[in-house]
Image 1 (cartoon, rainbow, N blue to C red):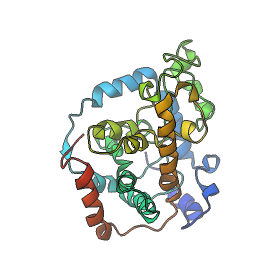
Image 2: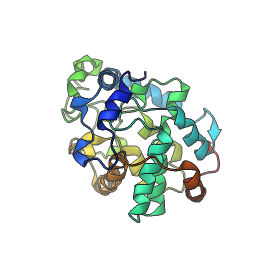
Image 3: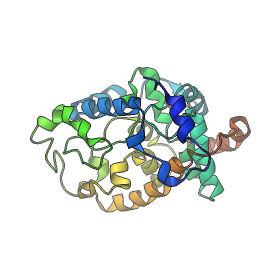
Image 4: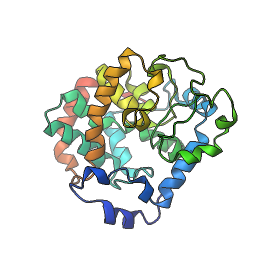
Length: 274
């Protein structure tokens, strides 16, 4: 799905250095963004998420270098995002460069570069509603802190007394690592890189960066364990670079590649297995 009238929308709202309050204005989003979230909220059931884990994990699709994956993502525009229409590699470098400019550790800069690489799922036939957008737990009640919560009325799990209860299939304090989130690029890139040299804080950024109901709105705290408090710190630390870099100028990809290739070589396998 591509957004009709996207260029007109971006021309009105996409400006370098725009105010932080201008981001994530979903009430003003184009009809295509809302439609993507309707499909997402109706389709992300517990059974669907489990089926995607079975389909994509273990990793057996193909092997590429990380830079090859980033270049392929040049073909993709995220239809869930009301804040930018730049290709994915441009947003990746915007995020990385903003973290670099603030003197953040090199592994965090690398997270900025690769945090959306899981959108490779789009090239294997996954619809964008199952790849992009905010994430949230399945197997329990959907929070009203999720964007467009009204669209969950069409999700079959809502009619299941267990899956629509507050705790659902989980226990209080079970830890977010034991909670199934809506399937998408966050979970996928985490699974792809969980055995890499990326620090644990970086892996948490990858896995939870789209979990806005948790790290921005404070929902689902009932499932947190002690380790999740540290994860929350790091995910919030990363979010300012992911979200608020989207109004920056488009980066010079060729000029920046040598620096980021060194970080890729330092922390990631030469061949990424998808």
